[in-house]
Image (cartoon, rainbow, N blue to C red; front, side, top):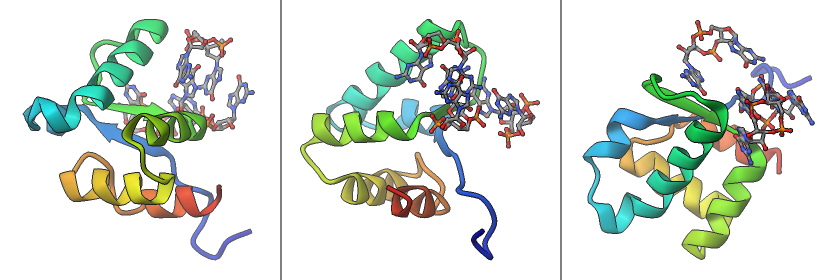
Length: 89
Ligand code: C2E
Ligand code: C2E
Ligand code: C2E
């Protein structure tokens, strides 16, 4: 087991996501909205997503999962802790 504890979850900050320009955040916002709809989870301020979904998002954004994670951290949409979730890939 890691001395830093279990692998952190990928938690999207939905309020921050809404504040970002659509040309950047649009694909992620649509993806998150689809997951919310599939779960019936509409009232959250945050959304926990699957590791697998970050891989799909990386394809959509034409980046590696690590690079996309850095971008989402720089936008304030993911916590810096998320880096450890992607190291586990
Ligand atoms: P599914 O993948 O067949 O999952 C059925 C149910 O199992 C989910 O219903 C949820 O109650 C539970 N479940 C599956 N994986 C997890 C997990 O990692 N954590 C937790 N806490 N529960 C899990 P739910 O939430 O109503 O989702 C219905 C369907 O919507 C899912 O069927 C899946 O097809 C899709 N979905 C929901 N959330 C996600 C997501 O984050 N990513 C993807 N790719 N699909 C999702
Ligand atoms: P946590 O995973 O640290 O989540 C803390 C709080 O963030 C949750 O409090 C909830 O308000 C919010 N949150 C995180 N992910 C989502 C999301 O995908 N959708 C929404 N709407 N809110 C989210 P909450 O619900 O009172 O849960 C407290 C703790 O209970 C969670 O802490 C977690 O440890 C556990 N828990 C709740 N739901 C699940 C689950 O589906 N799977 C697992 N494994 N644990 C869960
Ligand atoms: P979590 O619920 O704490 O689940 C942590 C990990 O346990 C998941 O990581 C997945 O590897 C495994 N797991 C949990 N439940 C199931 C299940 O029903 N089927 C399978 N095959 N594996 C399961 P993962 O996939 O990276 O998901 C991370 C977090 O995203 C989950 O944490 C949960 O908060 C959320 N999530 C993922 N899928 C769903 C879903 O279908 N519905 C809901 N409500 N939440 C989901």
